[in-house]
Image 1 (cartoon, rainbow, N blue to C red):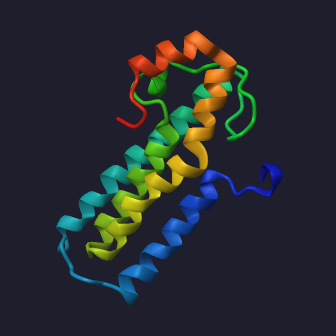
Image 2: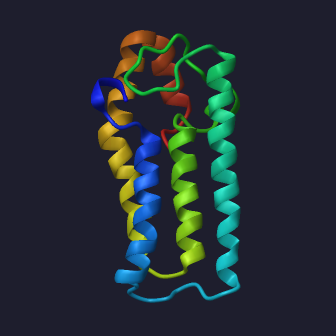
Length: 149
């Protein structure tokens, strides 16, 4: 943890641990019945793929994956050609898949809040750092590729 800050996977883990608690304690309403809820596996697989593909791109470009550290390269290819934050998008897809598997309304609240938390804690700062480091290259990339999807 840089500077004592938790990293994004810690927030994913907390969200994943909260989901069954919310499902049991605040089930609200079952909205996706079995076996239809099993389609939740699809966004989980896609989310995991995005996370691994994004990490591989960072390694290929020899730049850091850790937020708040200076990037050695602006990665704009592979999964980064479709979204500026494929790792965060992958996390959201994983959470969405888990919420679908639970099938009750409660866990979807966590899915809805998670992107806002990532935006507030990580994305805004990361994008400011990228703008400062890469200037016009960042501006062109930001104009071409959406933040999420």
